[in-house]
Image 1 (cartoon, rainbow, N blue to C red):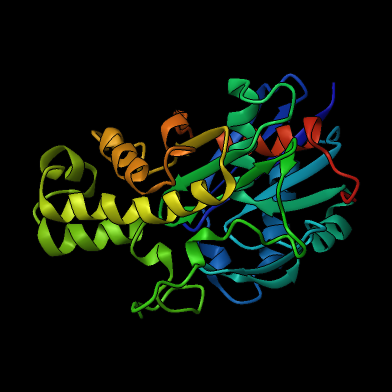
Image 2: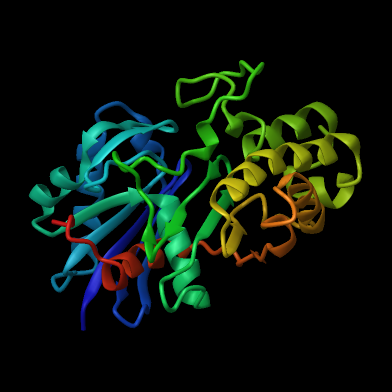
Length: 303
């Protein structure tokens, strides 16, 4: 049976496992990705993966698929920069791993794999004809776009960077190197700042439960609605997928967000005919999504 190693690298954790063509997951592990914050740490990633393969005697793997929190080129090889992982900057990561591990390797944005997981597992587009917008709101604001049966990448592979559109009049420094990016006001980072300023005695996990009706939280949801409404108006999607850490928090105000988005989307359509999906967030989703990309949505550019 065909098997791949799916890897989901985040700013805090790295998750990986072996996934077969029936999408059964085995040898799943989660550990800190802190070692990838150090400059020139790509060789440490090679050692990390080599040790993983040796530990489980993985000799029947056909390929490796990796999701990273970064812009990636259209060939799914070159990582431009991962703002929270200083060791993955301006690097042909797929080429490096392929030559070191002697397996086909492709790298992609982590949120692309998350959207592929949700589309496949929920059967959202069996005919591959729909436009689906993904908004994965965690530490940052991930924005994969599904058009005409595939992930939309743009000329350079970096389409869907809604998080880094600059906002007029804002100058908050963003880890990407820019200022005033949407992500700094509409993401988990922004929510943490609100919690620390207004609700310091409340854990971040209880912010919506205890304070969802307060002005700071209502303003946060309203702010989040602006970038979402902008892209929805531009692309007139069939489906809107909202997921990841912030959306998955207890008592996240889904109905309030929908109301605020609808208020700002072009009327009468698409505003009056929007369909929202709120999939459950799982630690394994990105790992399995990487395998789904290989088994079901492979592209000629993969080496």
